[in-house]
Length: 143
Image 1 (spheres, helix red, strand yellow):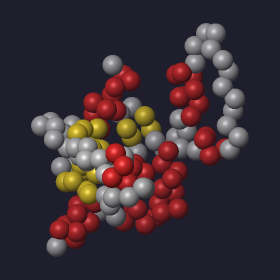
Image 2 (cartoon, rainbow, N blue to C red):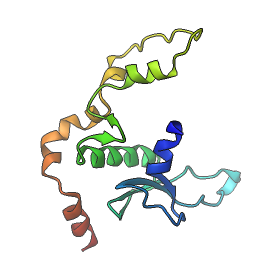
Image 3 (cartoon, rainbow, N blue to C red):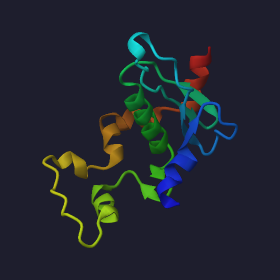
Image 4 (cartoon, rainbow, N blue to C red):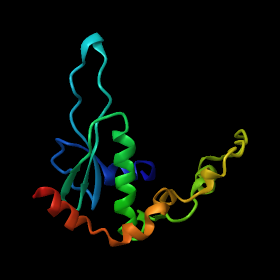
């Protein structure tokens, strides 16, 4: 059941009755109808932080922006996701978790960025982020 922990605690369809599963939940609205040519638009995400939905602009970067906002929320809550400390490198632990006897050896990444902590994406803004209060921002956006 450990492999489903993220989905169980931090992901919900917008129509789910129990969508507030934790203090940060990625929400996916219902699928939108196909556009001309039969292509479906990509999924769109928003984030439910402490019971307040943060709507993220549509566009090709919607999923990435939702994940960065999720990381910001985690950073503002001691940087932990379950038992995982997102301020530490986790790539090695991921490889070890996926390894088993007889499995092919995974080539090391060509770029050292794989060994950076997930919260490192927020590093350039760390000082400014410390001053951000998500509740104050939400109140300002509602006015």
